Image (cartoon, rainbow over all chains, first blue to last red; front, side, top):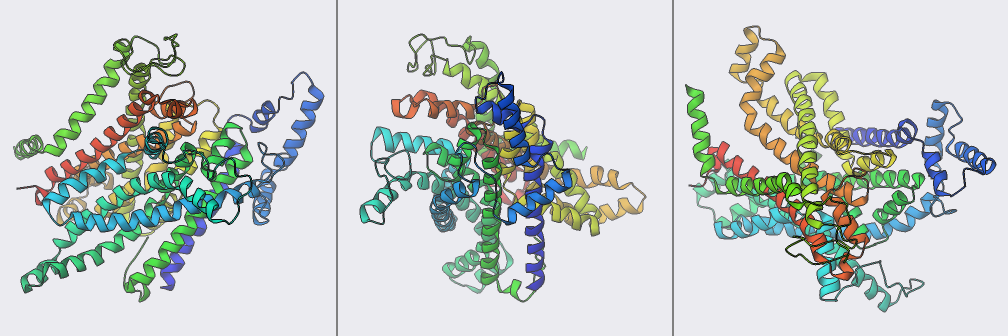
Length: 334
Length: 286
């Protein structure tokens, strides 16, 4: 177990290191000049060369671009550990960390139920689909279509149909725009859930399709395995065989969940854009449109940290479920 | 002689596999639309052709016109071209990197495998889109080629892992040992002995990478980090959302692009299942 964890930590540590390095490197080594772009936004007229030069000097210093590269790199890490991700230029003078911390609860609110419920329901349905040719022929194609759907398109369709055509659900924001300050009242929570439902549903449906197909394929594979055949030969009831098959198939599905996290997170980003849901995806779009480079970099780091944490939680779950990893009996290499 | 028979057998089962045929037909349909469509549409994708603004589909504008009076069909057909291009280039680059790393890691084993494995796992954990975003955000002028390149170089890890596992199991087989004993060079062994034996696997990897690249490109385009000055299906959806197509009920603007992506990617997945059945006799329906 220790070596299993050690290996995982090594991977996560290196990943974090690499991600931070990418985050530091890209603005500095890419063609083009972020400061010029940023200044272009401020409508500091280039005829007023005095103000322009002053602003330029200010930002060069803010970025720390006047220092030697190794110093810039060290400073980047130093400020990172102080939780300092810079100042958002599009939402001046709020700090990037503050903007993102305000957005994160909405992401958690959307992603955690979306991932867990689609995983649970997808597995149940997938195992169910493997039961008969008829069920398989209806559930599998549906699963393939859902998992092939781009998140934003499903979001657009749901918003259009349930929001505009039927007029049941709101299609923008996390709560009604006329609510000035969120309160912990029943009506506010109802309003919150009302706005949450459609973005959640589009995340849920796409995830559901993928999980159902994965489970269905695994069950088919497990039922062909030697132990299932042996049980069958012994005359064990089909229900028992299916139960064992399910328990064996759930392990790769947990690993699969970790691997699909990146896709789900990307899906959440665009879903938030469609529904103007104020999570990181929405902030990211605003940052891109306002060329707010500090905020873009901050979004990147927050996404990486979130995915690493989720991976870590999945690892712990895996160890709790599979006793072999605890006793070091398996040559798990990932 | 034997090769000829194998080929015929493959064709025999391929032509009788409904999934493969359906998937292939759908892809072909969209490919033809993408190739011929721009000629039929006559209008430039961004040209303001309809002075009346947004109009539902009609004989003149097959898919209607946008808020600004642009021809949706023309945008759609040009967008399809971009989609296929990104799929082929991005999927191709991802597959090639995956194959190279997978072969080397699986065949060499030992410390090389260990290092490549750690590297693969690191890239695997990082969410692809996050990296694509940060790269694209700093690129002022973006083309379909640069987009495909970046998608390809972030999408290979799972392919490398799968190919490594396959190579690993093949490299201890007798025929590979025999080739090694007869003094064949490692590179030659990989491409003449190992690769042909997992050709079906490599084809399927490419198909999945193709689909993945299309979805990734659509996401990037939708966020506004796609190619600058080129139309794409993702960009069409972004414009539709930005200019109130939902609220105004301009369904002809946002349904075709998403439907095309879903159909193409779904058809690719279906083809893959079909190919699996053709290549693997155990899965064939009797």
